Image 1 (cartoon, rainbow, N blue to C red):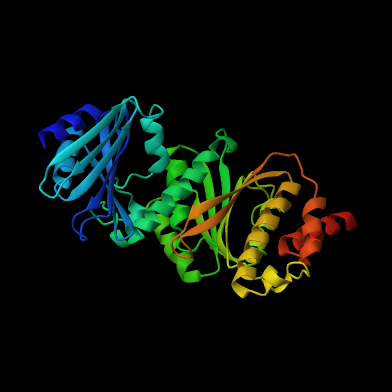
Image 2: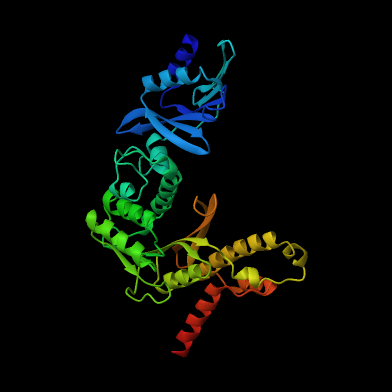
Length: 386
């Protein structure tokens, strides 16, 4: 293995893009192991991502540790591939342990790695860093390790914070930022949002979590008081009837079921929210409305109609938001509690309003009237009557 050791020391540096170990000899081994460089407190390290039983576990290693671990792993695996700014290499290990190396210098079109950027984007909350509320919510152990059964939740939290990171330029630094979280539930993401904005980024924030479940809100209040999270409040209340604030900077609505999402979006528009983050859930409304003679053969398949209705619902929501002056992106959001991938609507108020003529033609074509359109038309009529 000395030839492999020499190869690893040549390529395990800041110019490495990725290293992948695959094809295990034993089914009990992880299906795949990958490494990438990153900076930890200014020092070069390598993060190993170990994929086993559809879960991914992470370890951070120094350069010598990474070399020795890879050599040990290659006793149980048949193949290694690495890609770097310098070139690429493939390593094959036979049953008898013979190592074959094929190296191509300067063969890869790999861009220079921005290590701090990559690390921050993927792991805003580092797996090894103790975070009090994560321990209380059962995501982290008292020793600071991520609970295996909760690793998907941990990844979801980090992914959500990436969406927050992207819209930071839209949030004011010179004054307190007001955020409403409708249907906050156990508030994994609410606490994470507070921790990121207030503790990690230094924003002055007032985050209000709202939910109908009294026991859940009571528990969230206890945690907020325990960690002295000033400016993080939780109340029992309904999205449609909430009146305690007149203007907000951001509205978050995650998994508000069916038309509850529409009520939350309507509220966000009325409150002139600068940013809206919404993960819809259980869109049943349009499935019962959609009718179209041309598309009738497709609608005869219940599952197809259901999925089409959900996609049409979110597309129309996005179009309505754009008609109110928002720039909207529809993104995939990691969500392991409902479906492996879920849709997130990210809307930022830009002021340029899109005509509502096109989406209304779609509504006529499908014979649908989504709740968000109903609520906004009602609000417009109320203004005219006033």
